[in-house]
Length: 305
View 1 (cartoon, rainbow, N blue to C red):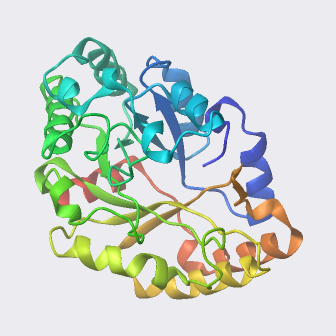
View 2: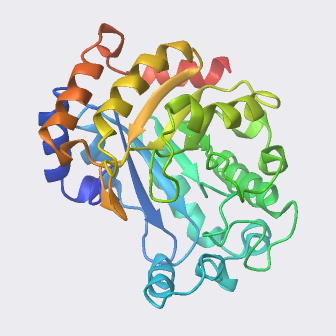
């Protein structure tokens, strides 16, 4: 994932040059307040041999950015009453959703949709602890969107349910937000190594294992690390990357990792230094990463689970 995504592949090309590997997927975001379906964005990703994964965000991100600039508390950033979950669930946005369903259907190749991600994070208006949302609203909203696509005859979507990993102040029981295996194809997770809030080193397993264990108590769906990255504040970014790719083979249920190649809050990019780029390139040169996806392969993965 890059800041510009399919709008500008400059950062993508820099990543490819540093990693010495062609990515197999690209995650890009789209907000409901500003974006309409644009086939061009999906085709630009697919034409480069990558699976398009849409981070589909039901909010006005501009209001969120303005709140951050004002220095408002994180819990107020997601206060957008127009985008309450109950309004999605009762069909208030159906006229917006239907052109997306028809557009995605017309693509003719698989698309992953990561709808309303990090729902356990109070920084988004689709979290149940903010914005006037109530318990159960998230599942109802998810199922409504999913069912609308199903009613439109859309069969090429891989639905990705993607919470944030647990942190000290995180909400309990992720199962509360899980729509059910009939509504989810892949489970995703966001998690980063950062010393911004703690001076302690945390390995990949230290960041992700607790949440993976919790999820495995209610779903065995294939797992994708839908956002990850590492900061270099303590000079251990290259070490973290090397260790992470050494640990990944132990996680047989993880089918993909999406690197957050963005300089935002902290510089998560592998191009942040030659040492980091070399560590990443060395790690992904392992034969287990020498593969390419095909539409048939992805849809078989979707159907068999």
